[in-house]
Structure formats: C-alpha cells, structure tokens
Length: 182
Ligand SMILES: Cc1cc2nc3c(=O)[nH]c(=O)nc-3n(C[C@H](O)[C@H](O)[C@H](O)COP(=O)(O)OP(=O)(O)OC[C@H]3O[C@@H](n4cnc5c(N)ncnc54)[C@H](O)[C@@H]3O)c2cc1C
Image (cartoon, rainbow, N blue to C red; front, side, top):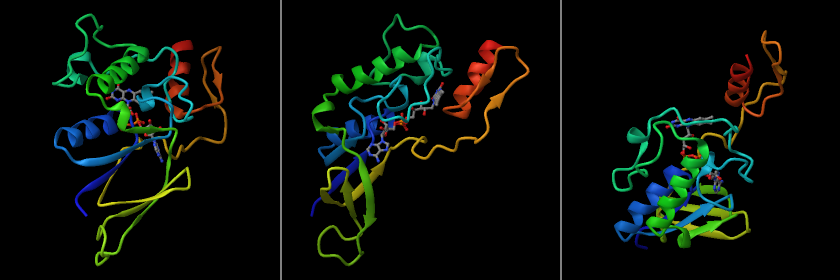
C-alpha cells in the first residue's frame, strides 16, 4: 500500500498539513467534525469546541501570524478580530482548493495502530468514523486542537469586580470576560 494519510481536523493545523500533502501528491482523507473550516476561530462553532468569545482579537500580530504563501490582506489590522481570522482560514482553504477533500461533519471516533507485521499498511492505522465506516491508513495526522477534552472548573468563577460572576464555558474566555467588565 502506498502512503495514504488520514488528517483529523480542519483548523489551521489540519489545513496547512492538507495543503502540503496535496502539493506533494500524497493521497489523503481529511475529516472535520464541524460544517466549516477554521476550528477554534469559528465563533459559535457547532462542534461545541470553540473557545472564541465575542470581543476576541488575536494577540499574535498579523504580519507574524500570516502564512508566507498566503499573506493576510493589506487592510487587516495589526491584531484582527476573530471574525477576520476565521475569514482568513476560510480564504486559505478556498485559495488552495482544499475544501473538496474535506469530509465535513464526520468525526474520527477511534484510531488504532495496526500490527507492524500486518500485510496491508504495517504499523499504520485503523480509523473508525462517526458514520460507522472503518478505513485503513499508512499515516495519521492528529490536528484536533486542544479543546477536545475540556477541563472545566466545577464552581462558578467570581471576581471582586462589581458586575462579574461567570459560569465558565472555558477558563480562558471567562477570565477575559471578567477582565473586560472589571
Ligand atoms: C481564546 C483563545 C485565544 C487564542 N489566541 C491565540 C493567538 O492570539 N495567537 C495564536 O497563535 N493562537 C491563539 N489561540 C490558540 C488557537 O488554538 C490556535 O490559534 C489555533 O486555533 C490552533 O489550531 P488547530 O488547527 O491546532 O486547532 P483548532 O483550531 O482547535 O482546530 C481543530 C479542528 O479539529 C476538529 N476536530 C477535533 N476533533 C475531531 C475529530 N475527532 N474528528 C474530526 N475533526 C475533529 C475540530 O472540529 C476543529 O475544527 C487562541 C486560543 C483561544 C482559545
């Protein structure tokens, strides 16, 4: 079996991986839980895993974060709002024609290593999809972000600021809301 890669996730990590695999002519399948690309930068992402809050601006500057082969638009501010970041990743996917290869609303449920002496794809991966389908790959790229298993506090977050009591959806977003209102 020649190389056949499974890519999990179409946030910026999965998209850039897919772009390189495509460039090098490597056969790959690309799975994304959500209905669009962008991962964390997709506000109110139906996958339930985005921690982006309404007022969020990225704190990495535009010229540091942009991809060398896909510069951000000239009129982007130094620290873009999350809506601009999402648009940038959507445009990246369109520019490099990556969408057709993405199977949206399909999650990878399990990935199990194959025996090193297996006849097909030795040392590769058996992947189980949310559709119930099983597929076999020589290689696996896990670009599922860092929100796949949230660690949420069990008690509400409180602050000395007069108007701030939040039940967190994530520690980072709650802290930021408190800072904004304090
Ligand atoms: C509030 C906040 C502010 C941030 N600010 C910055 C910043 O200023 N600068 C910076 O560089 N970074 C920042 N980050 C970090 C941010 O995580 C990265 O910018 C970026 O989103 C990571 O991209 P990723 O592709 O690795 O993961 P994600 O963007 O999280 O994408 C992962 C994708 O994988 C998909 N997925 C997950 N599990 C599965 C599965 N089992 N099957 C199929 N698909 C799956 C998800 O649906 C998602 O689309 C911030 C994060 C947060 C929460």
